[in-house]
Amino acid sequence: MSVRDYSKQVARRQRINSTSLVVGVDVGKAYNAVGFMNKEGKVLDGGAKVSNSREGFEQFTKMVEDLKARDGLRDVLIGMEPTGHYWRKLAYFAKEHGDEVRFIRTTALKHHRELDESASAKRDSRDALTITDITREGKYIDTVIEDGGMRHLRTLVKVREKIQKRNASAENSLHAALDDYFPELKEIF
Image 1 (cartoon, rainbow, N blue to C red):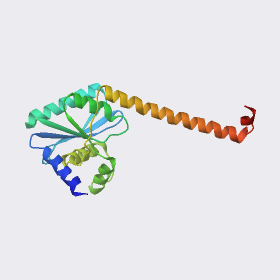
Image 2: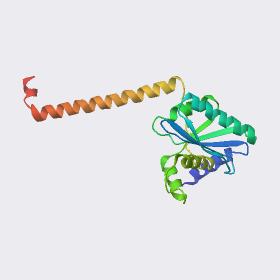
Image 3: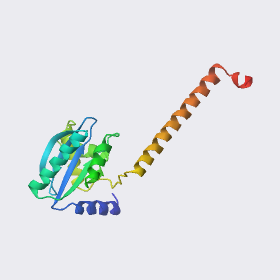
C-alpha cells in the first residue's frame, strides 16, 4: 500500500465519528443481510435480513432510524459489496434518503473473511458484519452513484455496447460456418 493510499484510508476512517452509524449490507437477489456498528466497532445489531424490495428498503430505513434514535447517532455510512445488479435498488434508495453509500471490493471481503478464524464457512449475516467492519476501517471504494439522466444514459450505453458485441460475435460465427460449409458462396455472390 502506498503512502498516498494509506493517507486516503486514514482520512476515510476519520470521517467516521462518534455520531456515525456504520451499516454493512451483503446484497442478494431476494434478501439483503444487514449489520450495524458504531465507530468503535461495537455491533449494534447484526444478522437482520430485509427483502430486496420497496417494503424491505422501508423496513431497512426504519431499522436505521431506530438505531440512530436509540444510540444518539446522526450520520449513516452504508458499505456494500456490489453484487451483480442487485445492489442498485438499495443504493439508489439509500442515496435518495441522504445516506452515504460506498462499495467494498469482493477480494477485500474474501481476505477479511479468511483472516477471521471463526469464519470457515460463508454466511450472509457474517458477511454483512464483515462488510460493516471493512467500511468502518475506511477500506472502501470512493464511488459516485449517478442518478437521473446520467444514470439512464450510462445504462443505455452499456446495453448498446453489449448488443454490438453480440451482433459482431454472431456475424463472425455465421462467416465461419459459411467458410467451412459453403466456401464457394463468396464467388457466387
